[in-house]
Length: 297
Image 1 (cartoon, rainbow, N blue to C red):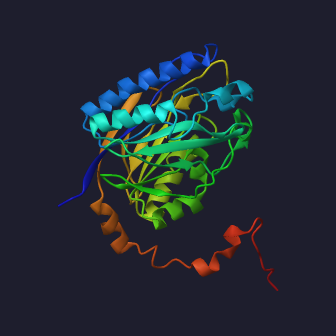
Image 2: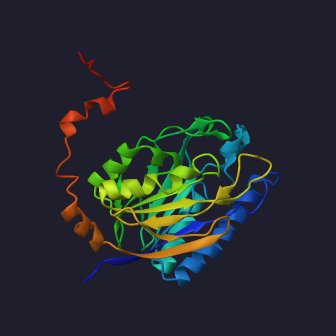
């Protein structure tokens, strides 16, 4: 009997401009997402992932200490607690990306993972923090993640999380596979003209190299007053063969749903024995700052 899990991704535009107060911005985005989560529940989604920093704009487009006040504790904060109730109501496991405060002045780009009964399973903290012109000033806001690459055993599947810029680094994607991930979710915020050419390249490659499913989420819209470009959406699921099997529209709010047959993981790995044929004893340079090289005679 096939292990089919119905999964969902939410891509959404910012509900209010940055000129509003932070409580107004946050409430508007949470209210908007609650409506979209209801849509996902009506579509019988069992595992749902929200977009990166879902309850606000992509404020990393500027460097302003104002945005530090969007942080919350995880799991003690109000957003995680609210989503635990929502998850239990719908019998839906959820990945909920938030701006986390570990203590005053120590902040992370984090995703809380909640099981279908509303229990808190743990969190993933984004490892790779960009500081890229124009408008991706994340080192101003986030400390690099320190919790490794955990895999969470939900009621429906074993899931991992990789956040946005992480997707450019295959090392963590492999660790998630070694740790038992069947589905890896990557909530993102990426704009047209910067890395769009990589959007449908890197994560299908991770899926194929590691033999698991990937759910890739991107927000939508142009967020004022910043001018870093259009968040184009085009969220998608791809299978362990690296094929995109469902994709959302460009530039519109949407709940993308797909049935993922987890038995395909075993089918693919019986053919491509990448885990068997790894040579970890030769990979030492991956953990060195500059690697090693040998000059040819």
